[in-house]
Length: 585
Ligand code: DGT
Ligand code: CA
Ligand code: CA
Ligand code: ZN
Image (cartoon, rainbow, N blue to C red; front, side, top):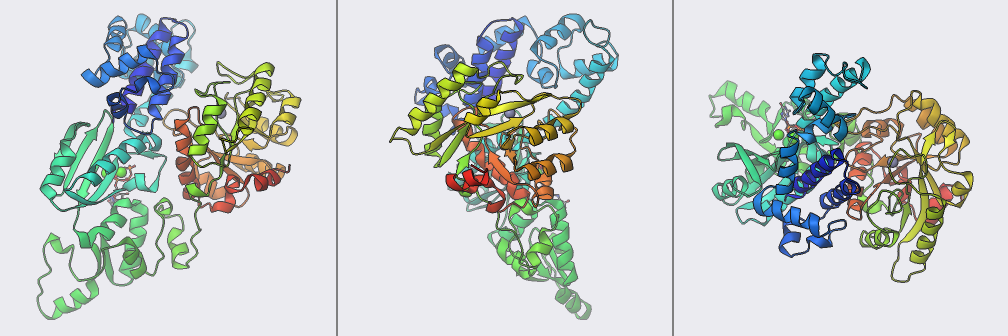
């Protein structure tokens, strides 16, 4: 599956074209990249069918470049551009605050070609000496390099998702494998993952290893043994496979799902019972020890790892049940109270993706989305949504394309048109994503009156974000606070917000707090969701900019689950009528 690799190349081309100050094309390449990345199938399959140009934003010229990449492993157009300007544009622009044009300057003035060059130049104080830079921007660059380097060690859950699913499907379809599950942080749905761990049983372990290690997407094999292997898939995702015995599968699922802290807490619970819990099973070692003190006893191999009488191990449920615990959903396994709750049979009935009836943030081609209102509606129908709020960017958002008054009216007409169409069952609502500005909101009051719901957020980084947000929530007709902390995972820290004040005000003012499902955001963070679940009303929204991105919903729901939310904590699990009354209209 090369979707991500292709998308990355297209983005690099966009950067190179932006450096050359080519008009329009950079945006076209970025749009194409976004649509390729949000495809629900491997781009190789689309290519094989001859359908590349069916992808939104992919015309003849970009299709040729994609074909070139899939045929040869590289885009010659990209190579040409890079020969002209031999810099690692992707790595350098991954540093927040360093755009394509800055990258070019740094190359011409300081010969910066790689992230390491950039770091050295900043450390040597040479960036501060450049015109238009200073000590402060140099210090920022250094901070952000650190973050970019750390970011390279972990992948966004949403980026790992299609790749991991593809591997899982492939192994599942192979005769050599029997059971296959993703485990580790991926199964727990942490916002970022260090690697993807896969657990399996195999009818033919040798063939299973061969299948896993020799697939075309595997770019490197780090290690390969009889029951385990570790490989690199694509450029940057490490996948660990472990094959275990059937009767040990449940114990291995528990162990390799983690988290480590959860495992330790479980193990201590076993020890309290004079038992032992490890990846092979749950064993009564008290018995073994008592017998061993009478007659010397064979404890088996594995340094006694399987010693004692096996109490449980074939299923997860059995392992938890033996420890007097209800089965714990993987998203909760962080040792933040889930074990006590499971012991008291008091685990929340977590919200599920299927519970969500509507999506309350998406963009169309009226602003920076790729698809029309109608196309988004058709896609929402395919996702079984009951309602979809379109929220294009209003004026004063610091992005290139926003709605003006005429576009706002034209979009209203589109919405009415789609809603009048019997072929489409989803109800489209017209909203707006408005900037929270110094004086309130970035849109005229009468727009807010005409919107079904008003979504407001910060896309800039003001010095006093708490005051600004709190004032807007108090004084302006906001319904949903979008991506509250403004964080971009692995790229940008959250705003320095007083969450007590912001979420407290939101609760007082009846403003719902968004859990944004975009892979880079997943904002509000799950820990804050858990902390404020009792005060705040949440919504989970995809913020889709393409039809494909409506798929992101489950990523946001997973974060709500990590925050212990049940369906009643998430307003868009309600029917449209109930949603309207929740928002007071
Ligand atoms: P990651 O990959 O950094 O996103 O996080 P995880 O949680 O997937 O960690 P990973 O891949 O190192 O290991 C997978 C699971 O294996 C982990 O969640 C718990 C288990 N595990 C690994 N090392 C240890 C350990 O030293 N002790 C215990 N109790 N469990 C461990
Ligand atoms: Ca892992
Ligand atoms: Ca691992
Ligand atoms: Zn936004």
